[in-house]
Image (cartoon, rainbow, N blue to C red; front, side, top):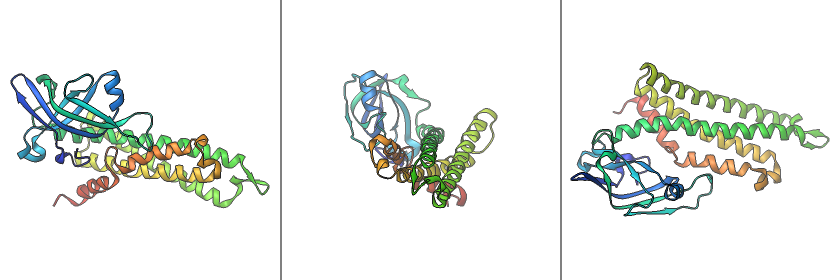
Length: 266
């Protein structure tokens, strides 16, 4: 379980005649409860030639329902309650050789491409959550009256609304740009991987933190009611926090990617 450091994963896969044998573990994996209950599996990065570092990683499909050698554990998280998160322990699990995805020892490159496609999606989810929170917050400011006037009449509230709206639209455009560049790369062979890396990491860096700050502000606008579960805002706050802490790459990883592409690997 290497997290954002894909090269540091511990799960291995070896060839044995007409089958592949997988050993290791995967931690903080989405959908563990659902996959073991309803069926399915995971596209998994495994070490196939450890001495080659990241050039010795491969990609395979790993089924988990009713598979000998698979045990799972589900974590109790503070947010993202729509889907489970947990760990998978893999002990001498045999899979057919055709469950290898792509070429042997090319898994690192497939995984990096997958990250670039997934990060705009989670960034867009954060934008959606923040947009809904801001929309409901604006309605509340218009309706809630204090000292004889709606909260929306107070200059301090107007400034916060303006700032949050501008931050949200800026983040939204970064996400749209990253998604558009990916479309152009696949459809028209435009943009280099370096350009894609920068755009995607920028969107993933900004969207979760902007969303978290907006939802936090809206929660505070609601006063004591905002602190209740009935308000629904705390769920959004807890949900987007997962994308700051690590889901699809932690924020400092995004900074490393952007810095590397701007300054060079040297």
